[in-house]
Picture (cartoon, one colour):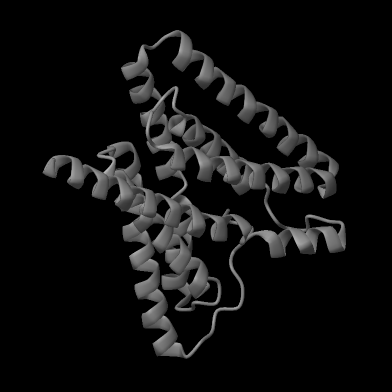
Amino acid sequence: MPSVGISSIYSGYSVAAGVTGNIFAFVLFVSPIPTFRRILRNKSTEQFSGLPYIYSLLNCLITLWYGMPLVSPGIILVATVNSVGAVFQLIYVSIFISYAEKAIKLKIAGLLIAVFLVFLAIVFTSMEVFDSNGRRLFVGYLSVASLISMFASPLFIIKLVIKTRSIEFMPFYLSLSTFLMSLSFLAYGMFKDDPFIYVPNGIGTLLGIAQLMLYSYYSTKSGEVSRQPLIDSFA
């Protein structure tokens, strides 16, 4: 009986951590909205890049598939957050394609098709080639690789802050949301005993701490207030 009680407590904590992670992830998903308002207003993508949203879409789709019961039973909150993320990224990419110059439009449209083809290939391979355990490992490793590759954006921002000694392009609330989302899913992965969740989010948590420490150091040093995120480089 005590073990049942402990299991229930752990289950409750894991749900709370997963729901919290979903909430903070939503904050990150809506962060590029000012960029796309500008694109819609000016009817031009200007110098913004569509690649971060393409990469984010692929990342969301792979991680969404990893969270599905057919692959990893019991972590549906991973699927929910990434399904929402995939919808947002698809909307952003569609808007970008609509207002980009012809050459860029064709490039991003081609990459969008490639993303869906890669995703379908992953789904087909995981279902047809692997058994249930092998499927989870196959998609899990792909998910971790995809998530770690997304850390290029925070590393770029950290490097930029150190180089310029300025926090202008590292908004506090965006950094805080990134940290809290990673921390929440780190806890979720620990409660679920799933290294494919807690390892990449552990790295994300460390990067989030680094961003907050840099923000604290350089805001105190220079008295600056960050104005806008690098929303063309971070999705």
